[in-house]
Length: 400
Image 1 (cartoon, helix red, strand yellow):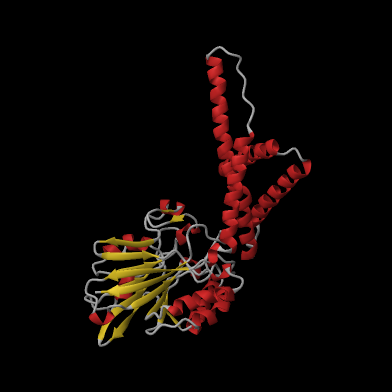
Image 2 (image 1 turned 120 degrees about the vertical axis):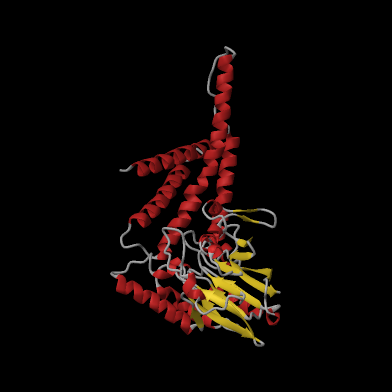
């Protein structure tokens, strides 16, 4: 057993030891205590099964395991936090009595801290469950007005819809997302762009979504790029040929939905004899993510003076490559982060654990006259829900 495994086991042992102290204080019923341990062991068993199964279990089983872990295990952190606070106060009382020469003893636990900890545990568990059953369906349209330098007059008021990170394998019933297609079409967009991660692992996950995506209407077309999950990196494939077939199948499915896949390529969007350039690159991310994106290739044949909009799945591409390029990319559209599907996303307060990995993780950023927009994602991966970070449809209105 390696050091990481020993440390992880120790952490969860301490977590469960402390959490049970609250249960033991609040009830003496044997049935409740036994049920508590039975449910806890079931959650650990599900997680261990998913981590060690070979081949990897179906995505539905992974979702159940992750949900159990978050609701029944990780949420107990709040119980431990309150009991640690109580133990700190008990320890101080013990030391003060000893320093005053009084008879020193460790005060007994009080029900208040255990009750408070259990209350926060229950609240957090309910939040995670709400995210699974309701949160991932709370799609919202975020409206962004963008002034782009040099935008042709004909494109003033031009409307672009961006969606990203569908992760179709996370939705067993595609028809439950019909309302999101209606939301998109209600905006009457000129252009619809999908910025990668259509699937979790396998191209066939997208098949039930072909009719939905085909029903999306856009006056000047629908375009897409690949994300890291679209390259057959996370599935069980016997060889490279099978992986390539999976990628080819996904591209074919998108074509069936009337989406054109841009792979280090560009198209001109014309309106009243004026035009802008739409570019799409393959995934480019910091390691361990693939760096297939080739901005130079995508810019081949594009006039330097055109306003350029780039689809690039991973937002790290912006700082690492796009900003450094001699040709100005006016707007880069990315996804990938999902806002970690957990956090605070209020008007004046925006926080998510993902910000400690990605400096640019949600919404609009500007640097040196170039814009990056990071979409919060349409679907879910890993944790099959959303808490605080709503799934997003972005509507851009361009202004000159």
